[in-house]
Length: 154
Image (cartoon, rainbow, N blue to C red; front, side, top):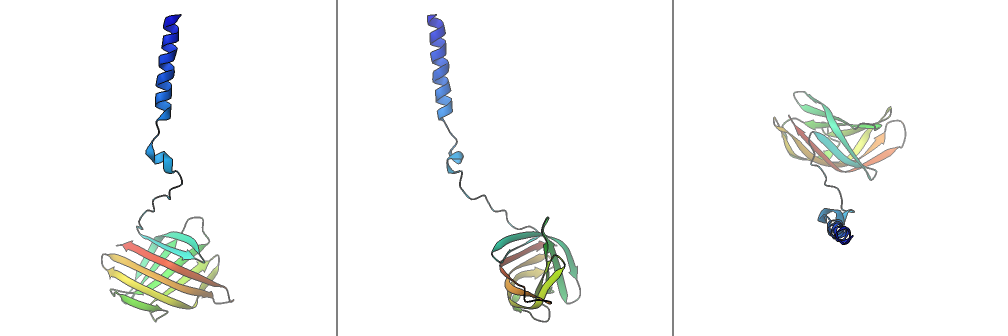
């Protein structure tokens, strides 16, 4: 009987010792998740809501690069037009720099107003930041695009 009580006491002591230990990572369970860097994606806040889509198509002509981005299960897609092989700060719109937003079947790109900074734009890839407003052709529906980022590697 004495041996049985001793064994129970030992098991209880081990049990308390192991259950009182915790991993330090669990103590801060409210920490923000790590944000993954962009990789062939466009990220932007649309009317204050974060949108991050994959670049699914890049079309190059002699003067312009068109970047198309979509997000799974989203009714919004983006078309971004930039000059080929040029790094600079551009007003939106210019003759070759603009951002078009497609929401459902509506295109919002009537006289967008904003700016874009192309920091990399060559045969290796495109990196840029942008902010603008896009208005519907058929109504006064306007979306505000802020903190936009483009990252694409050819």
